[in-house]
Length: 350
Length: 256
Image 1 (cartoon, chains in turn purple, blue):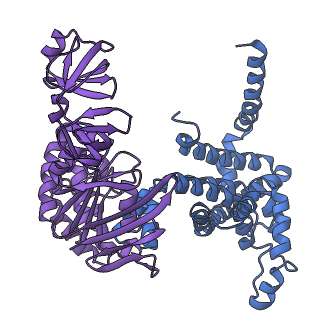
Image 2 (cartoon, chains in turn red, cyan):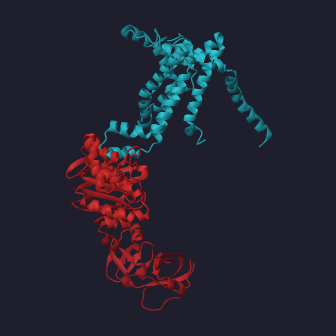
Image 3 (cartoon, chains in turn yellow, cyan):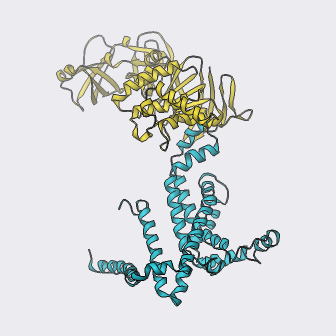
C-alpha cells in the first residue's frame, strides 16, 4: 500500500508544489502552520481540487495524471477522509452517516445499516446509533466520523486535524483510540495536524510544510534535533540560525558571528538549546565565547521553567528556573547579559 | 424621539392597520359560513387551491434545478439570464399575462404550433391559470433556493463525494436535505404569491367560473354583485397571508 503524489497547483494566494510518497505501513503526519497548504494537498489527493501539474498514484494505480489526462473522480477513488470538524451530515443519524458511503457505493440499505452498526460498535459509539450529530459529544462525533471513513474499506485514509475540534479532556482518550485504529488499518495513512504532540504520538514520520512547500521530513527525533526552519525550531522550542560556517565560527544571515566548536564549513544551521543559554546581571567573565548584552523582551512560565526571550545581537530564548529569575530581578524590559559556550552550538549542513 | 418622526411613523402604521381593521369590522360574520358555502365561492376556492398548488409543484420541479444551475455553474450570461427570470417579480402582472399570450396564445410564438401539432390550447384554460401563476410566483422560489444553496456549507457535498456519492446522490441525499428550510420557505412564498395572483391570470386565462376564476378574480367580481361574499373571501385570503407570515417570521422578522 503506497501513495505517490506530486501536486502542483495554485489556489488564491497559495502556491502549492509538493512531492510526497508514503510507503507500506507508515503513518505520516503533515505538520505546518495555518495556510501552509496542508488541507489543499489533502483535497488534491482526494480529487476535490484539480492539479495544475502532477500525478497521484495509489498502489501503482493512477488516480490522476496531468501528463496523460487521467482523472478518477473523487467518488471513485478508494479513499476515506476524516474532515476537520468531521462534517457529519446533520440530518442523518450516526448510523445513517456511517452507512452513507456503503449505500452510495451500491450496498443494499439493510446490509449497509448492519455494517454501519458493526462499525459503530468497533469505535465504541453503538449506544448512540440513532442519535443525530448535534446530540453527540465532540469525542463521539470524531468516532462516528472515523467509522464513516473506514466503513467503505478504503485503501487510503486521510485525516484532517482529527483532534483539533476536541477539548483537552476528551483529546487524550480519543487520541489513544485513534492510534489503535490507525495501526490496525491496513492501508496508507496520512494525517494533517498543527499540533506537534499529536504528530509525534500518532505518526512514524513527520512531513513539515510551509507556504506550499515541504521544508523537512523525517522521524520526530530527527526533526527535533535538526530543525531546518524557524517554524520547526519554534515548535520544538530551540534557537535556530542559518549562516556560513568558517572554522570555529558561524556568520549568520543576520550579519552576526557565533562562536561554534567544530571545523564545519559552508551553509549550515546552528541550533542553541535554550537551556544552554545563561543569563547574567553584569557582563560575565569566564569561558563562554558567546557573550552579549540584550533586553528581556518577553518572559513566559512553562511548568517549572521560565523562558526568557532576549533581544540583542541575535534574538535568543533562554530557559532558566523561576528562582534564577527572582535572583536576577528580571522583568520584561530589563537589561540582561547572555552567554553560551561554543560547544553548545550544534551545527549541521543546511 | 423627534415629534414629527413619531407622527409620520404613526401615520405609516395606521395607514396599514386601518384597511385591515375595515376588513375585519365590515365582514358579515353572521353570514360568513353561508357565503363561504355558496357554490360559486366554493368553486373559486377549490380552483384557487388546485391552481396554486399545481403552480408551486411546477415551480419546484423547474425552479429548484434552475436555482442549482445559478448557484453552482458558471457560464457566460448567467447574470443576465438570472435577471430575466427574476423579472416577473417586478413586472406588472398584466404585462406578464400579455407576454404569455404572445408566446402561448393561439397566434403566439409557440402557441400556434402547440395547437396545430398537439391540439394543446393553453390560454383561457385551467392549465393557463396555472401557467400564469407559475410565471409570476416561481422567481420567489428560485431566489430563495439559490440563496440557500449559496450559503450552505459545501464541504458536506465534498464529504459525500469522498464517500462514493455521485452527483445525483449528493444532490438528493445531502444538498436538498441541507437546504430544506430554504426549500420550504421558497415554496410557501411561491404558493402565497400564486394564490393571490390576479393580473396575469385574468389576462392570459380569462375569468371563467370553475375553469379560470380563482379567488382573487372572484373577490373582484363579487364586489359588484355580492359585496358581502367578496368581504368574506378577502378575509380568507388575509388569514392565509397571516398564516404564511407567522410561518416564516423567523426567516424575515428575526425571532419575534
